[in-house]
Length: 72
Image (cartoon, rainbow, N blue to C red; front, top):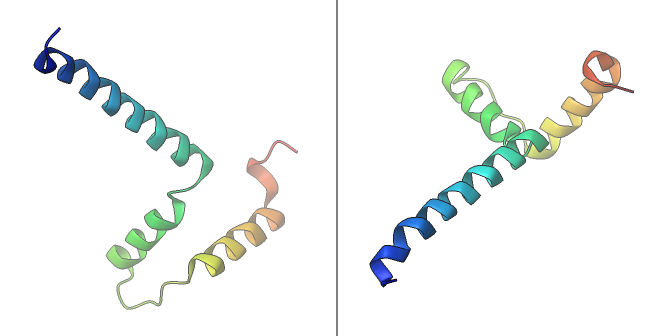
């Protein structure tokens, strides 16, 4: 195989790996704060955006008060 014939499959594998990593981090909630900030900036541009620490503290406190979506 030549270098050019290897590039396409390797590029496809790299894209697939990036997609799996994106899905995995999304499932774990790694992107939640980023999405929240984007939402705040788009829908509530004049409102202050909480820090990452404040966001997660509020989210965990809310989960304790409203445990409906948890299994345990």
